Image (cartoon, rainbow, N blue to C red; front, side):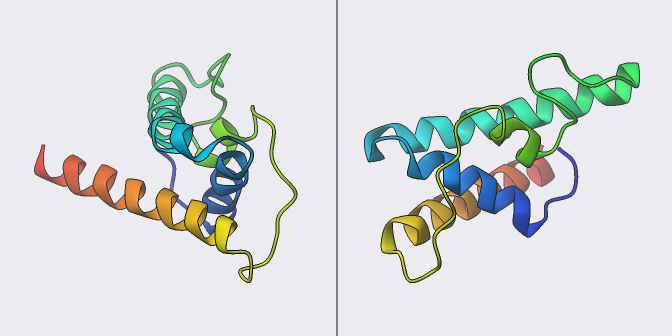
Length: 98
């Protein structure tokens, strides 16, 4: 996956905000996996992945509906943002151990 920036996490959190809480965990993992697949595709071919984009989490997220971005005073958005961060930490820890 390409280097992560605030916009990547925000975009993924906005996608999660628009789905029921029970679906968020799986969808978050799916977007991270799609970003990783796309990044490998771009590295191998020099072209965008046809379904998942350029290998950034933002690109994978923005292929879905994004909720309007609320502020951090919205507890639901904070929960989604936190979920994305937790999954990214797990993703990076598992990559370094592999």
